Length: 398
Image (tube, rainbow, N blue to C red; front, side, top):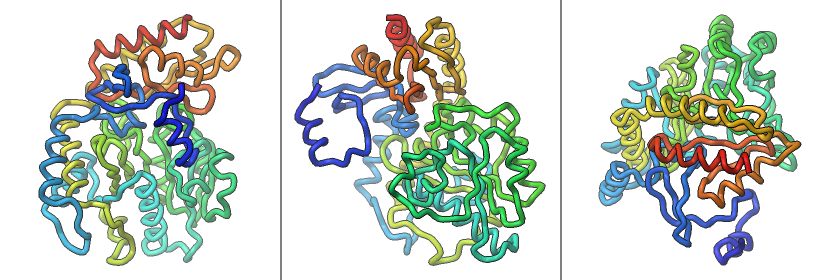
């Protein structure tokens, strides 16, 4: 259904998204409301950016208070907010140092730059010969360097030429990683669970095997946890499911508490110290407002035990979804509150199911044509989850 907001956006905006036909105006917790006053259960969380729920009161208060004092200053100066944010992030993740940015893609670019310079200055790789190994099906962002790593044709068509120094291997295949490593390999960049590919999980033990292979070959193991990090999968980081502490960790999305783009690359001292003044920077990265919101987001995550909630509710949600018997569903997969329902294309498309769920007051989104992504805010109540489950079952069986 068309309305003035949709028509104006279609007319003046780039068509780089294919939104569902709903215009949202208000949110609270796991609920959203459209301009007509209809409520919806949010099962998307803006790709994990709203893990804390919409307009969390503690985050609203922190944002408002800091915005009245100081929002942005150049990193040419210190502020009284950044240090505590960096300290909290490092202590939670067990990393030595952190470099704050804004978007997830910026944090990935930061990790790539760090890995390359580390390879030249610490490992002894010949200048401009460093290689980064990535996986088939990866999604690390939208910059030209990063889409050049992708195996998805649409992400790349019309945007070349792309940077070299990238090697792709099959996801979930540790032996393929080992075979691809050369003396020029700087890093292995991997998503612990591939979100955009359709909530694709690797075999159990895969990350641990890869970490061992990287350590043996003096290669940095860098985990892109922009979507999977900060409790989304039922652990603080998804790497923890395999007992892995990566050499480099990329966080984003939920780090901004659902308010601001806040991202971060974290690593050990030896790697981060390759950066010297002038090597890298960001006008807005680490600004006082972002640092305040980021610190509050981390504090809320621990104080309200959102990681544990994700683990408990995620297991319950998975069990209920797997109990739905329908030829439409060919698989249910995921960890924590990061779940993909695979729709058999012989019976329906994922988007057609999402449109029907929209009518029932459940906001979801398709990934490609066959997978429905279900990733609600970690603050969702069991009652709200049960309501969403009932509506999903109704649509699947209708």
